[in-house]
Length: 106
Image (cartoon, helix red, strand yellow):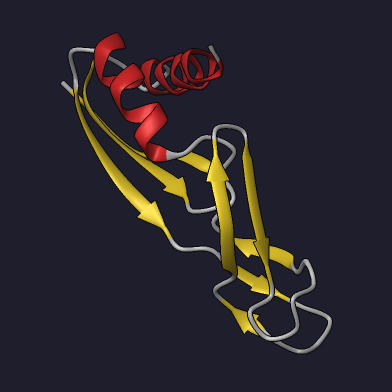
């Protein structure tokens, strides 16, 4: 299960900071794993308090558009999106990663 690998990496990264009591994870709108897939797996693997934050996607297209993409479909491992202005596939500027953004230790 892909979500188990991602959750495991988050756990290992958090443990490098000490005796963990809480973490905050940011999940990008265009991340390869949707928050709803990661959340139950990570919550089951730890006893820490886990807070989740969503990161909106930002793209830049060759047509000049810069802003949120039009998401066509978001599935496990795949997100299909396009420029809302011209329909081409734009470059991603933000919102494609899953990040551990805060670790609280005892």
